[in-house]
Amino acid sequence: MRRSCSIVLFLLIACLLDAQITVTLRPQTVHAFDEYTQAVENQLTARWSGQQPFQSIDESQDEMRKVLQGEIYVRTSAQDNPVSIPHGLIHDWTGTIFIPHTPAQKVIGIMQDFDRHSKIYPDIVRSKLISRSGYEVTGTWRVRRKSPFLTLVLDVPEQEIYVELAPGKWTCRAYAKNISEIQNAGSSDERALPPGEGQGFLWRLYGYWSLEEKSGGVLVECRSLSLTRDIPAAFAWIAKPFLQIVPRESLTATLSDTRSAAIK
Image (tube, rainbow, N blue to C red; front, side, top):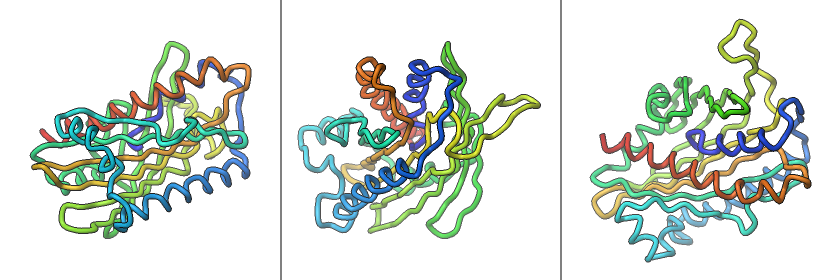
């Protein structure tokens, strides 16, 4: 997410499953996701502390050249993506973009400005800044996506923790945990389901951002982890190709929208 980058994926899942079937997020699923997340954070700590290249794009000069020329480079971060865990799937993707003639501080400002997100990201229909304390920011989004089969509405609260490592060099850890599905959105019968209950289209959404000024602009990289319900085995062979394509397209759009907002 960040910026609702995985919502299209959950609509695909909805098409493969009976929309009336509900599931509950199980403790073993949360435990497996937390273990996976901790391993990812250990990897990123090594990068952000200088033990390894700051961004993964630094390890590929060919891809770096393409990104500096304007390409958006999105790739899987797991050998077998999505990653199967008990009663769930982890979707792990990384995207990199270069924003020319832009300081890192301007991009940070866009990321923190929840009140404007509904004007920047098409899937966000309502957004609000909740609190700001130093380098910690909390906000919420009302996310809506339509398909011929389903209208999906989610309330997504997010906590973001920023660190300025050096002038023009930032990191951000963004955590969306208590995500609620909204039934009958916009009507007098609107109801928010408790987090972890519903159809399981999105249970967790974590984003790990790194920003570094270079080459007359800022290089922005995001690693996105999302947790959803699993896919019944009977549907897996149909779903897997789409489960790999859709997150790539969604993360690409997220980065593109961020760049468009930054260069205005």
